[in-house]
Image (cartoon, rainbow, N blue to C red; front, side):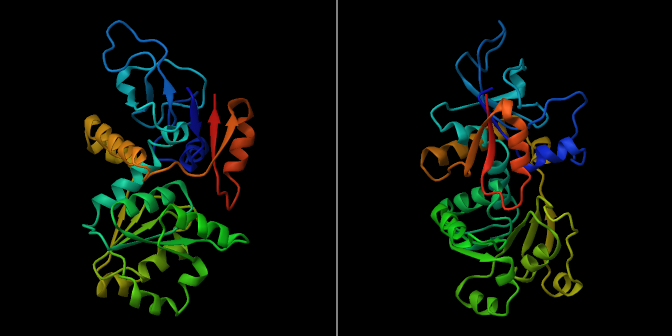
Length: 297
């Protein structure tokens, strides 16, 4: 293994409250990049020196070395940045599929999302920009809000608003100049998701892929009846079950193409040596954490 991030889903898995739980004893970590050192005599798909990422969750990437079947791995180009390779298999895949699979979006359409500073959020901003879509990015207010706004705009964000601003009446004027979004991406739940629904265009869809607030999604009856809004969920592991390994490989190569073109960069990362894993785990669970913890081997 070369590097492996600490994602919220990794923590959820350890806590035992995730949709996929490995048999114990298990190794943590669902994502990362490794380099092939040696292969068995009948292996044809990978060769020594290749960079590889897990094909599925539950592989256990927080370790220095491992023996896997070739079916458990997908080759990635070794000329992309290490942090990009290490964070390629979960968040950018989720972002891309949510933008492509729920609404037929055209260049100039807008998308609204919360948790815009998350790994998925940063990928959504960049992939949407590459597709010609406008993003309305909701974040929690914080002391360094201008610094965060500038960083998200440097990634391609069109608009950055706080949760508090989203609740104000002035947002009505905002949508006179900006097309109402057909698609909302929700990683928070609770009041935040209710606000996203309020600003969706009639017939629009809100896709929930996380629940950081640990509160239910509450949708008013009137929004469902009079605006005919759709509530959907997305889980990458389920998408993989519904699609072939080749389709997942195609998705990975599409994202690698965006990386090569300079249209998709890794989220802000802090590299931590594997032996300091406790520091990385503690840091990853802090509020307003703007940097993804990456364990380096």
